[in-house]
Image (cartoon, rainbow, N blue to C red; front, side, top):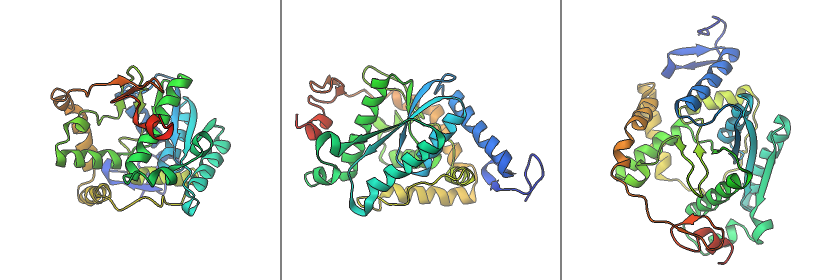
Length: 296
């Protein structure tokens, strides 16, 4: 197997692109792919200030490294959830701190225990839907932080595998609300920072190879609250189809991005009010975050 560019020994074969690359040309190819995604969806202007939400996993670390190499003003945000079981939060935080120190990326840690004297484990005793609670908490903090520092956008490490599986799940339920906002970019609105997903068209294999090539050391600890979910099964099903029909995931998701207006036309935005505590838009006041964490 030879590199398509230099004919040297290939580092990776990418059936979806009908190509193989040596390590040097794969690195260049990967950066070009992200650059095209950013331009295609008007994610960022040159040298823009962007906050990258770090989890310690390979996807978010890759997002931060790529955006930094492409010349954007990157700063990272890690939300320490205070999950002590299996040292999950400690290991995740350590992975982020080591990565940012190595690549000279400013890192801010938002520590729930330091802010509210409790973490997810304590709150979870009262709320059975732990993953939903955790997601709401991180979204609120990341949005609020991005607005506070005046960054152009908040970047997350969602990949093609994530986006295609989410689309598949939403189509199965005909969830018009989420189908209307599944794009790699959500524009800024009053009280909401612009959100971007630079890896939205990159598959698991490419991202894993890029992380390996650059010696990234993602966290190995697994969240003790993570459970086998339908979402994982959807990912596995789509990956099996991808094996038989390379490029299917990307065609599926890109096709959706060209037709998303059909869902937007049929979806009304839920009414919003302003939270009396944090001042951000919410379905009710106080918002869920302030009610749970600030005892509002």
